[in-house]
Length: 626
Ligand code: ADP
Figure 1 (tube, protein in one colour):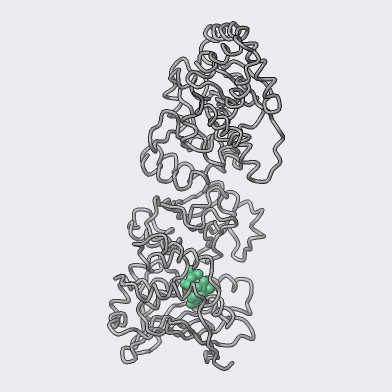
Figure 2: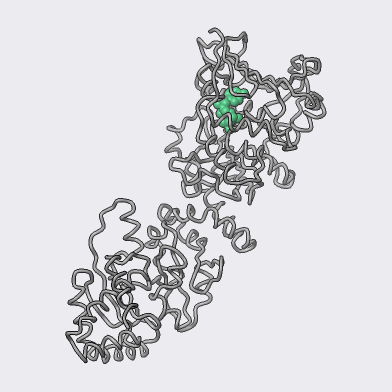
């Protein structure tokens, strides 16, 4: 192939410009990124080699060499990993903007004072950090496998890169940096060693240093200790070491919220090192997001993102699992029904849930942070993981009628604070907290000093069935069926009162029912209102308004489920309407009032009035009245 010039995709050039011109002082992170790429490439080669001897023929000594040449001002990072073909290079190092690159530039646009190089790793554009220290980057690579040809990629980071044939006899990749003036420090062994120790000590392959452009000998002492952190006793590992490993694994720029070392002995034996991130990554809610843990079998890297080791609702957890109970040449398909894998998964699930429960108890502020970031995902577990249903229930946090600002409580907190007269737990599914707080449906319940849980997450509607009861107490929706509150005597008393009023208001309820017959099923006097004039109530089995809207938003057909309009006989407006009707049953204003009542009830539950123009005209008419 003769030399071909290519133009970087616009987004990539944008990233490059930012990287090159960033005045950020931590330029040394380029080394961490390039060593990490080299290590990933060896991981991949090692895994392919387990099944394909043609690709990894000679049980190679996996290694990463860092070679400095002060005369030439070059630094090379060489690996004998998977290598890249021309197509790979074109795809990975220049043309196709990955979702990561787009998200990266988006994040930069949104936040003004971001830390550019720290974002680089997080968004999977680490290779480009080389341009922070290099005026020109050359990549020479030979991909493993038969019939591959070596390729050379060169770029100065300004608009274009070239691709051409190259000479290289052993598979692997060399990234050569022609350092900018003033960057000579990265040619010193002590500086490179310091960086490797700090960021890459746990890399599983030896990283060696060579001077004067010479390849280091295979028996030279590596710069890194290569100790797998998950194999070391908890007390032997410094928090910084865990932190660096987490950053390497997750590309997160922040430390983890929680580190969970796991060591299990017995029927199955494995070690794991798990991390809870502080924040959800930009792609956490994207469909088909890769998730899972990295799997090692007897120190050999089997693969990243093993989702069989983790239930989907814990997909925010990062980490590694290392087991000697699995065969080396495993494939995902083979592992699907593997009993050992199932045991590891259930063990890990249990460990994560118990860690969360401890955190909820001992570090409630941390737990709040966790729940704000991942609560919505955790809740999915209620739907899918019945076995851990009770544990999950205890982990869910809610805003309630009594919590203030950003306060949250658990079901246990709710139950503990229940007044003696309260038997059940009350909840309201609503679009948002503001609507919930102002909902007429909660009046009677809060009026008695009882609290109401607000379920405002879209997933809440799906998990409510699983939340049916807690600690022997039923969860009751405040906006459905007949809400009966208080002791038996109180209930009988309330019923009597309603019945007495019912005959007094019969003409009015009959009139409204007839007038609104296309929209509602029933008109009743309400047991649940104290301040508002009216509200709409679903039957026990029907969906509430929020759920209906959710289903429609997902293009599901929702059957018409006309609801009951409840009126508050102690409210001045209802009393006024009753008086109007008694004075003149043909008063045309009565029909308008009935329409307005329905519109108000719909607004109060977060739905638009059925006919907004008509509703507006009626209000204008009322306001213009002398
Ligand atoms: P990330 O590593 O997060 O995917 P990078 O920008 O660092 O993002 O690298 C882009 C891609 O280039 C990698 O995913 C990998 O496919 C390829 N790559 C980079 N370095 C190497 C290497 N030393 N050997 C093989 N492939 C590499």
